Length: 521
Figure 1 (cartoon, rainbow, N blue to C red):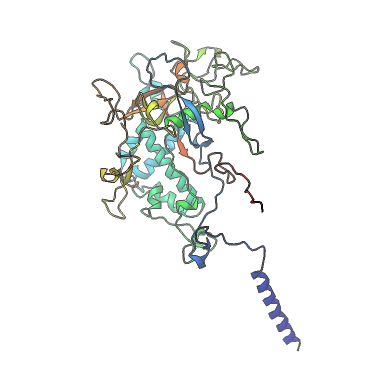
Figure 2: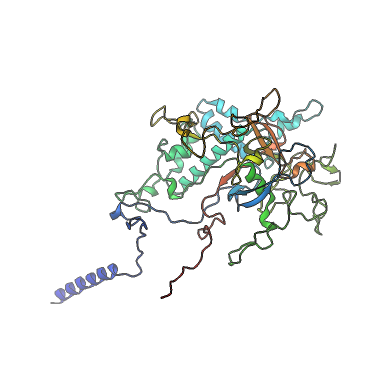
């Protein structure tokens, strides 16, 4: 009798628990499609995985730059009479940019990876192509041989900006950095097995190294970690099995590192967010649409000549950047060195600007992505202006499974004219000389005959350790061929920002949020 009573009570208890679980008001409801009503992340409805928006993670080395409108171009008299930086108003979308210039140590890490991946595989030419030209320090009438030998390799110069790098080499570095950062992100989440990846890559992987685009297209076969093959993995396929391959939609990977556009670089250099007298904050205060002070250099105007610190204290009178004061004066007098740098300085020295970015004026000039034309400023779009587009598509000539080049990257080729003929927004895949040297314009460039400007001429911005103060203004611009380098030009990387332009938090929204209106009866 007692046994039967115990069994009845147990069955009743289990039944009540099942009913309570089914009616549990605290059980998370499945998110539904506003278009079809079907559940997301539900195996019974096909298991369409939707990742909720979350805080955008800032990739290694970058800082967030909130975009906006500003007057791009000259801020002082055009003493060079180039007329290549006519002031005009543009808008730049929010983006990320390196806090510091790429250093010798950063670049040597890149070479170390190339040597392990391609050098060990007998592909030494790829390593050789990436080497910086240390002979840029050599002069006929100066003794700079120690710089030739030591500047790039000696540990004393680890934190100094890399120089002797061409625009093409800087672009290749950005591509490599994208893949290494995303490879690490996938290893941390278990989608790549760390031991397998490191062992394979640094022991002569050659072409079969990790590439972000190749991974997303299924051209790179990886060994997944143990965690993603277990039930702990929240990502499932349509049958409810753990998904061992990540997609870009999962929000685990970062965007592409790249060179900043000229407009992005110039906008970031001014740090205008600090010139807003009332910046919008999380406290609900509405920000001003006002730039209180038109800066000349990358720091706030707080002094008469704007080149020295004026606030009282130990730093008063110190130069705010590394530049050349005049003929024969690169660092001042012994016992009172004015910028304390004979040539370049460490990348984390001198005053940061409003976005916390260092050395946007001085130290080294920097490559940007744009093709140089004197009048691009007056011709380009006023939203994210840029000259340098070559619209591409995947080269499928090798067939599926053979889409990678010698470096392991997806082979690309310019779009054929047949695809652009009926488009309204662009007519040619190659837009390098659009409205400036093509049949649609009245301007022609005879490279080597009437001008030094060609489709390989790239813009570089900012003054260097060997420049006078005029070139420290972010509005100035010069050019050099993309396959040439100097001892005064370095670079930093940038990355596009996705989502609401105001910030990187998940609560950041696009537009202005108003309370819903209720119709009165």
